[in-house]
Image (cartoon, rainbow, N blue to C red; front, side, top):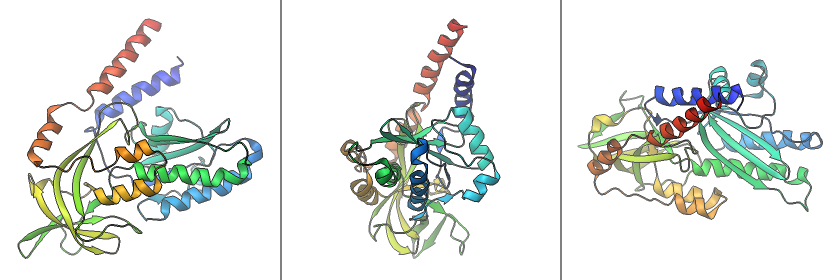
Length: 312
């Protein structure tokens, strides 16, 4: 095992243990040019712009511009990143997420890394049709992968401070409300259920898959829509003071719509059905506090470190 990989493992280990094991909203995203054989470079440039456009459609993400990436001298196709590379690029570009797309033989792969700790957010691949020229299908395949990533994100909004009242929550007519930014072109409607969630890592698998855990700590329903925001009436919470700017909000019906329309795999579609409609907030919070989320990760890394010690 080379030194770069060893360093990467240590970086992930310390990065994961330096934070509260809890992940926030993905806002700032960097999409690197697509890595393809030389004969497909022209098609890959068009596909890159199409992927960027897909990420900006619903106004949930802020994408690094081509000029910004060129100025930072990082505008180049990239394949898989080591944790060390992802952390360095994340800090250099001030990015929450790094998206790389690359071809391996006749398969197009996309991987999304955390720009903060270098861990995996998500990964997926799509086999290209051998009977169709790669240049004719590259853009569609890349956008399909981007759609699948967007559908995999387990939350659909983030709580913000209402600029008028200057608070995370506010009262009207004896009811408590919060303002949630949900983006554009959603199917969220008045009356939809809302769940405030904590997203934590439980192992080193992709966070938006087997590596993450969601815990509900409050519930509400959409009272009204206001542009790219939803005004949500708080119905149940263990402690209203727990609701703060930056909290993640899950809209189960919107999540189902996204999975049905964008997810590529039936297995993924099944997994994202609203699998928990909490009957008791306190019970869910107790469960969340009962286990240490990184136990599996630490055990895995300990095994690797033991192997390295024996190897050296």
